[in-house]
Image 1 (spheres, rainbow, N blue to C red):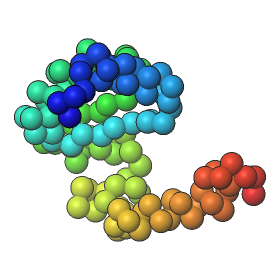
Image 2: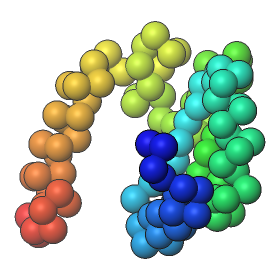
Image 3: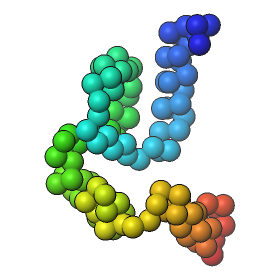
Amino acid sequence: MSNIDSKWALTVMDFVQNSYPERLSMVLLLHAPTAFWVLWKILKPFLAERTRNKFNFLGKDFATKLPDVMDPAHIPTNLGGKSTLTPQAWVQQELASADRTGAATGRAS
């Protein structure tokens, strides 16, 4: 990592956010630790506004705010939602659904 200079890192970050802008639709951060806030303050000025706007910060009271940004059916029960799926089971379900509709492969059903 010591061989990576800041100019190169900024070039890569710019390339990724401009070449693949819609690969990330939303980031939810629930009760982020202090270390994250330090990192965010460093990175934020280098991110495009459209990328910065995709980050949603929900503090200690995230359980009351989470249903405003996400369907409760997709929120795990331990976070106040209705989903009983494990993360792995949810990914398998989504992949199976995308495969049936052709979304994952670009094929029409």
